[in-house]
Image 1 (spheres, rainbow, N blue to C red):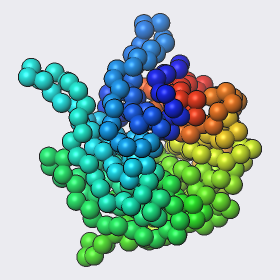
Image 2 (image 1 turned 90 degrees about the horizontal axis):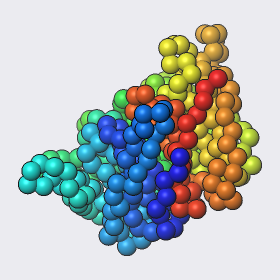
Image 3 (image 1 turned 180 degrees about the vertical axis):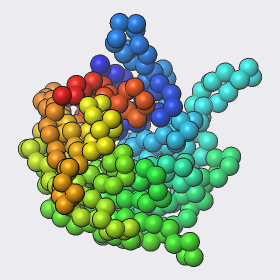
Image 4 (image 1 turned 135 degrees about the horizontal axis):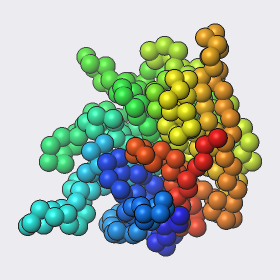
Length: 340
C-alpha cells in the first residue's frame, strides 16, 4: 500500500491513536493526512484526505499526535514547533486544520517531538543540544517546564515511557539520556545509557515499558532493560543492517499477544534500504535477563534505492500488524507484517 503526495523526501510518519488517520511530513514543508478503511475484501485503502501547508519556513522533520488524536504537533528545521487542531464549521462538522499555537525557544533545527501518554506534556529536541519539556494547558497554551542541556551534541529524538512520565532522548553524542521530574525542583537527567559507537538516531519503548530500543549509526539496534527505578542495562544487540539504522519502532505485534512472555515486534529501517522485523519474547528462565529475538520479516529495497527515514507501528487495536515507512523518495508506504 503506497501513499504518495510529497514533492521532497518524506521524513516522518505518525498514526493517529483514535482515528483512521496517518500523518506524514516532508522537506517540502507540508503535512499530508491519509485516511484508511476496509474495502470489504480484506484490503485497506488509503486516501489523501488533506494537505496542510504548514507555514514552516524549512523542512518539517517530525510529527506527533496527542493521545486524544485531536492535536498534531510538527517539529521543523525552522526551530519552531507547530500545534495543529481541526476547526469545526458552524454545523459542528470537521473543517480545516489550523495552527493553534507556535512554540518558539529552540535556537536551531527541531528534530523530534513527542506527547506523553497522559497528553499533559510535550517534549521537543533540537540541533541546539537541548531537550525542552512543555506543559500542555487549556486553549492550546504551552508552558516550558524545563530546558535540559545534558547532551554535548545535536539531539536527534525524544520518546516518552508508555505509562510513566519518564522521557528518553538520543543524540549525535552516541548516548541516550533519561529524565524525570523532581516534584520539589525541576526536570533532571536520571540516567545516561552508553554503548553505541555512533549517533543514536531513534528510540522506542516496549509496550510494557520494561525495555527501550535504540537505533544507531553503528548499524545496530540495542535493547535496554530496566533493572531499577532509573537504572537500565543493555541486554541484547540486534545486528544485520549494513548501514546506519535510522528508525526503530516497538509495537504490540500480532503473533503471541496472549502469551505473557511476548514483548511484541520491533521494526528497524536503515540506509541499506532494508526493513527488519523481530519478534521478541522474555525467556522462561527467571535467571536470564536476555530476551529472545526471532527475525520474522526482512523487506529489502523497501523504498527502492532510497534511504528509509522512519518506520512506525500502528497503535490501534486490530491493526497491530500494520507498519508505515517513509523515505527519501517522498513516498509513504504501509506494510502488513505476517507473524510466524
